Image (cartoon, rainbow, N blue to C red; front, side, top):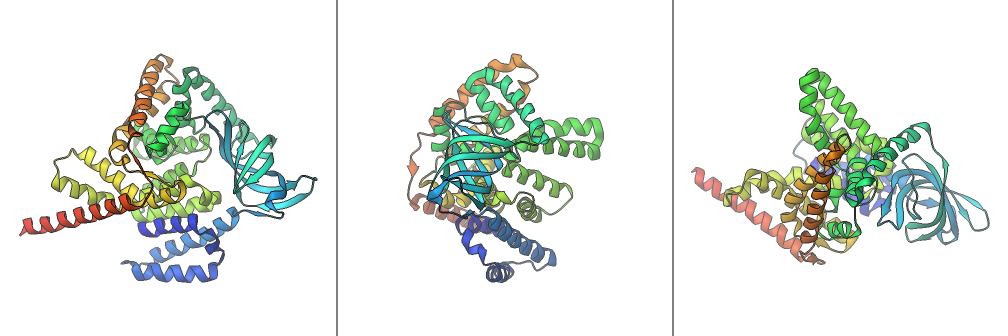
Length: 435
């Protein structure tokens, strides 16, 4: 099941046109899943079938389709499905679901699908209707001006909440910008150097809202809510809090995935079924997620962790006397990299092997930083702690970025071979030791 989800996301990202042929694809993939699966339960068949059916419709809805030549398009209109994000203070990036397109003479054309917009600085929120004037360059629409067409009341309420929190956090400079990014999902990565070093070190995902950040909030609140309200009502209120956090963050697909995954686990679905069902529910609720890189990485990396991290962890501790927490974190990093490096290499042209070592301390630092970011809102006197942590994180990313980047598949293949040999050797030696 984990492998089905990982393969689904890879195919969905790299071969969207392939899935415009559902009558051919669905029987083929259903047969493949049944042939290579050890399980034959009806629930497994239904989940796999639903997974691919929803993927087809999601891709159909998000695939760009404009009734005019892209070179003639001078403006696009649509609904924002990803909050505008500041890019080093110079421009903002956001994603829209197209409704119409215009040419330079005022002609209006039908348009559908998902398009990423790089525009002049602007604050747009999930659900806003916008019009952007500019031009296409490849698959990206570069906006020279952007205007808000309409905003509903729910989005207006969210905007006021987000603006109030951002205003308070901005008082702390770059430290506050990073705090805003971790708490709200909007803002910048702090200073340009920090953002650049995070990307070079292969750890930019720790700065993007994801299931890790949702887990931090759950870990903070769960013991308190259970003690006050009991297990049942405590879980219910915790889910409401996490739901509101996902709403405040603009329904980030990686966050919604984590929320749905937690919900299915709460209702005692098995782990692998919960993982697949969370992708199904995400595509059903937010079909634009099929075009979201963060969502793709979320499922691919987590699928790799579920598939391999346990085996890698046991193999590492078989040969080395590592602390359990470090071994588990290293195993999770290795497993996530094994699953995600092919996509990273294809999209960005390089990847960072040093993340295996640096992910553990920087993940821990970001966890502490997010907790401090939440606490500094009601307790402003903690701001010196926030600024100190930011300086440490900035230095940490700077050091992590010193590892050389790999631009070929050779280091990845060496990693795959090493992991395979380590797992196999530890398995054989453990079998000999038991005799």
